[in-house]
Image (tube, rainbow, N blue to C red; front, side):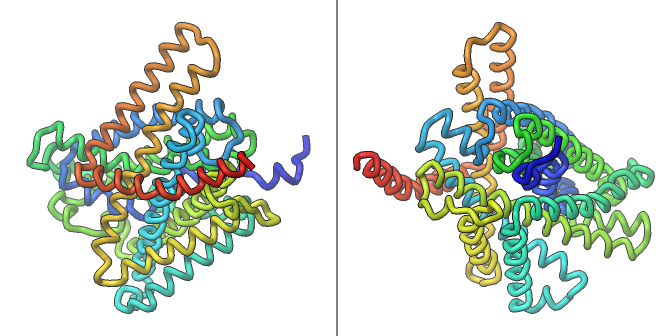
Length: 442
């Protein structure tokens, strides 16, 4: 049967998978083995635990896409259905700010990766800011061309970023030396504490697993496509993360690995010579560019979803002729530009770094509420058989506990300020709720 014009302007299975993989694999993964080396080889166990925990999250999001089909917003839409308008708004508010901070950080990572090829970007602030702004607004234009255009860019950049990672991940297995691996627990803390820290770190690398659920209305046959794409994305990313870390740790001596800021590039040099550094650096730049494209797509859809439910100014519900919520996309790009420029103002660097840490926590909270919403919506969906009850309880208990563990390990100060960040959105919610009540009254 022929696709209609409307169906052609939607994301298919592989494009949805590339959105998930592209959003999870940013420039940060190229630094992960060095960061994890300080914990020791226990970090490999952290990857495995995070992958298992994320598998249950994938099942939750897959089931939610069937319980709440064809609805844009992902965790926001699920939380609103399960807990009402306020909790839905609160989740969307924190998630939107989190993605804004993350996009600013990704832009900075992109500029940093380009400095390998354009050295002036590491010494001239004006050039760095101009390059960052250029990348943000180029992708704003791309995203306003339609979701299929954004999806095509995402597919291309995902394939290109995976090439150097897979070459090191699989090729590196032939260069491993057992003596290079760090001690099992290098952290100087108990095994449980070390494992908790590595699980928190590795869990953050899986942020983005929900990406295909957010533009659900723009996905072909979402009830089937989203669960398949989410599971495929998890499998691809887990292979890259685990094998990549094993290879890099086995190629580079642990003391050297702790100090390097380019672990994948250093491993590639040992394997294939000095020129390999450049194609790995190109991979970092492409990874950041692709992740920025994918998260901008997601960020533009979120204000649109909230505005459609009358919880955000109605102007954000407007779409252009290609079905893109252009007001939300433009607003997001302005916010990203401001946050990105903050990093280059000396007095604001520390504040910006803290915002990035805070934003990571703000993404985990929607995961927590999504798992709880799944339990509620599953019960409301109709009478359940004994086997379905057990499956529902088990899936909720494991996924909820896993995300709660990751949040608890983020530290008291981060959780405290995360709570304050959620509270800042209350005046906006009260204003929108009052407008909604007045319109109903009239």
